[in-house]
Length: 138
Image (cartoon, rainbow, N blue to C red; front, side, top):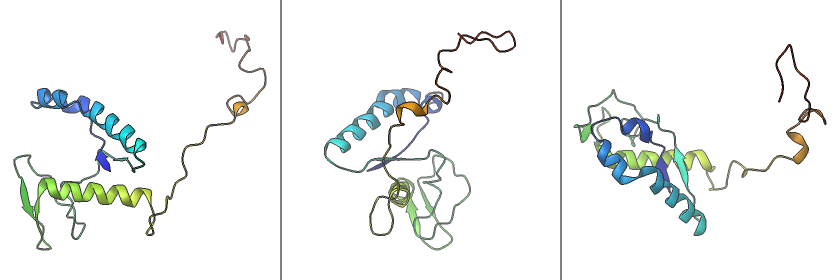
């Protein structure tokens, strides 16, 4: 399952603010993420700047910017797209391309916590009270 990482704060400043905040996009995606983990499903976010609605899902061509009232458009390759369905196909393809190779295996390893001693380069650096050019460390 893949979703677009939307800028909720930016959408909240538009005329759709009430709808965006009523939908609770951040809460919704957080719930999707933990439920996907609970049931062993893949969850990922696609970058908010990915042109999902403007890119043809058939040939990959990116068209010029469209007004929000344009709900269907035709690509020069001949494909006709509903804007929302096309975006859903593109988000799914982008999410799958980012996370797995052609056989479905994971490309990137999972997060690994840093070793305890890695955060400090000198043993007593974190406890130092010395000042550097008159600036106190603590």
